[in-house]
Image (cartoon, rainbow, N blue to C red):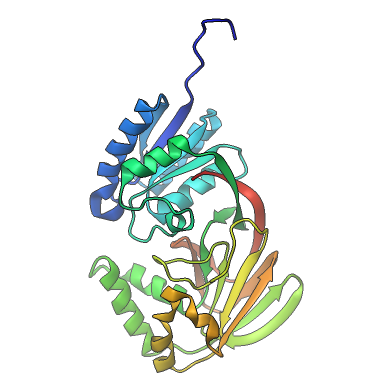
Length: 297
């Protein structure tokens, strides 16, 4: 660079879910946009009309060589951003504006202060984290493949009520009829056939706004944490639910935990969810992708 020539400002793409957090996404976007520009970034301000358009915008920005993709929203928006940046070397920044924000919890990001979160993006050093992958899809948090996935599927089919109450009603509805599921698990080549209430595959330790189902999972160990909850009574399942917020369900006699590099989960009639997003019907093979995400935290 010639003497006296100013350095080229780094460009970031700011991608917002305007409906995140009951409208908090747009307010957080305005704050983040101002903070990033004040820090000297050239900001490409992106808002998609739907998830498909948002992903196209994100991938176009990554292909154009932006330094980072900064997403404003919840875990669903992080999930979308990861599909664009995984294994590319483009960094992912997060300004939390959703309801669950589990990835923000992992990274100890400010969840109610978009200015502070944007400042963390500006000041941070990129850090490498693992991802999990099934088919072409990456995820950061947990893949649910049991009772929790069945509840998600029912809740998504409901048009009323909105928000958390819809999931509460779906949970109550499923509890009336839910029976243990027959699974076949291939854990790094070792096959297990068993009945269980659920199987969860964690890249990180929690999902659903702090439910620590895969307690102890690390984001940089190159391993997946597979948790199995063996059959229990419906009242027992209800009593176990609060333990998930504290991670104390690990002491239940029905709990078992495996650490693997790859797992195939098979069960009839189950549609799996990861990062809160619908992934698809079982069977699915999930593999750890060490260091596949560069995150600004």
